[in-house]
Amino acid sequence: MKTILIVEDNKEVRNEISDVFKMENFNVIEANNGLEGYLKGVHNLPDIIISDIMMPVLDGYKMYKEFKKNSMTEQIPIIFLSALSSDDDIRKGMNLGAEDYLTKPINPDDLILATKSRLKKYEEIEKRFDTVKTNITNILYHEINTPLNGIIGFSDFLRTQVDELSKNDIKQTANYIYKSGSRLNKLVKRYLIYSELKIKSATISGMKKLRNCEYINTEGIINKIIDNKKFKERRKDFNLSLQAVDLKIEDYLLKLLIEELTDNAVKFSSPGNKIFINSFIDNGSYKIKIKNEGSGITKEQALQINDFNQIHPKNCVQRGSGIGLSIVKLITDIYGNDFEVESILKTFFSVTVSFSYFIKK
Image (cartoon, rainbow, N blue to C red; front, side, top):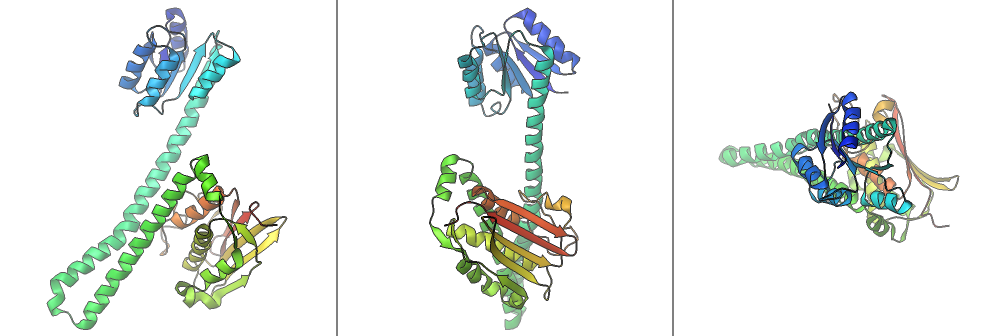
């Protein structure tokens, strides 16, 4: 049962609105002015607030501002009801951030529809947030704890058994600690990069700063990444077909995008399986396509690529954290580009990033 707070100084109108929502199975709380409405809102934390504007003690606008100042109530959606129907009045309410502005006399069906629509919107946001929170919690638990336990376990073994270990044993144990530390270091850096980009891209000024960069040559960057020693063992599996283009994108972001896609292709394919890395112009767009043979995913999993979803089956040894493709998706969003996934389970997996803008003509 959803809780609704109705703030209205006219008792007759307030009762009519309350009756409408009680019939819709809402838990209804009433207040006869803005101050009472604010106090009851803080105490009861309703799912949504329906409020008049012209009220004694504290009007609807001032009450709204008080709710938004309070971290406990700032996310509660508010719908204004008012006899004030001029464009300026409506604009003032909407500029404050109200979810809707309905003029009196109120049609009960319109009010119910507007309320349910806003509640549905916030439920979807909460569901999305809960999913991301669950993904982050589960992934961090596994992806951080695994190398951390390795570091603690092997270092403790080294600390307590050092007098009984041979030089080779010590070297091998130190190597395990180094690998675990490197894995943890890489994961933390990727999460920090993702968080930084997410914060910067949340504002127009941040987006402008990210887009205010120089043109860079894509072919040279791709070749440099492919020649990285981390891909040395799979170099013979790479099949390259690159078209040089000058692209306006932050140098480190293009490198990160290519490295994450290549790393993903290597991780989820076996030695001997081909990895195709192509870049080309198609219908005025510059496209980078990286495809690996072998491990693939279902269509349903492909739709979930965002915000730390681990898209590979749980029984897959190389599960990964899901952060790599989330970073790629975020980079493409920042530059207003397309991100397309094609895959057939146990056959192939490919990602195509299309740069429709920021190409040097």
